[in-house]
Length: 415
Image (cartoon, rainbow, N blue to C red):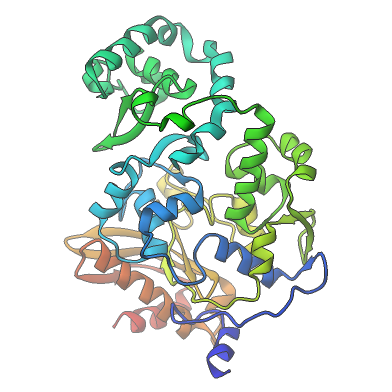
């Protein structure tokens, strides 16, 4: 009993256990706290991590791991695995994403690593891109046949090996060959199942996808209905907009398919919009579990939807990497800090000469109250020290703390 009592203070670190909940508030009703727990458990941030299944199992259960070019502590897809599994070696994480033959890269939630089992479910999107060939420009259409023939005859190739790497970082700066390869990737005539460095390797789907899954037989409704169900499993409880955002479906299509989804309509305390819950998640609501204390990538599927993050956690988080430096409030790659099932602050990290430097630590007002600031600082310190160990840093330093009244507690926690 005493072990559960400490969970009433949400800022208590990774050894916290959620108290068991016997039933939901009322039939069709969820408290805000229950909705938060459903979301955390669905994202594998509450409960014992599946270390045996590791990263491959995590990709299957999350459905999509978003990719991004920014690398501060590590690239975002590495941070997502780290947040759930702890200090797994980065080489192990990379190999799990692209070295096992059971994932592929596609437009899931933006550019994402997806489990290969989802290949049939994106037939609707491949058809969509084929019908919109003109958006890729005449260059892609005129070069695509030559690119496809080279991959077919010479084997998997990067854009550089094809003779047409990017001219610049923007898509409009792509060479004709790169644009053609991306068009073929979008339509499913090519597939990316691994990367070399940060370069996509283009291959033929028939060399990667098992024969029983290598088809576009499923109609649009079948594909999208199954993706709605998967979104619900990955979110626990969600509005129609949340469900649409996970795999970037149209909200109108989600609303049309919801009656056939098998999801449970619920009302969540404080939410102004109707929600739907995964029935298996509701059945497991009473289970207790261990909370994770960690830094989260801004592209983590727990927080990639800003509106949902604000609704569930009260955190209005945005990426400021593309905001002019003098206009940033929180930092270039500000990472939310998860502890005790709450997002209690954010850290803008960097590495300098073997030290993990928190350039700016922002503690949320409720977590910075005098009665809570020491525990908050301790949790942030724990998250920073573990992250430092993971990326090979030997120390941690903090440059700036907001509010300034919390600076002493933050520095004391790191001592």
